[in-house]
Length: 85
Image (cartoon, rainbow, N blue to C red; front, side):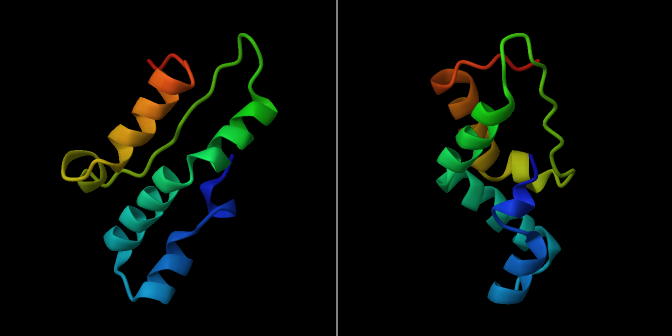
């Protein structure tokens, strides 16, 4: 699953005149607001005993200063009942 099918940092940066970190933050917030897209993508590939790897951006600001990753993770775990390790 590639989030760039939903939104890309390059497109966000150009459209909203954002720097690299601002564009990444916008994309994560956009994903958090459009979780049904991620759910559809996961449903298409996830089967019983399937392991998924989420490769997230390395910018610490996305995890420390903003709620979007916590909301995304909370939805995946609490509402969709995936186990994260």
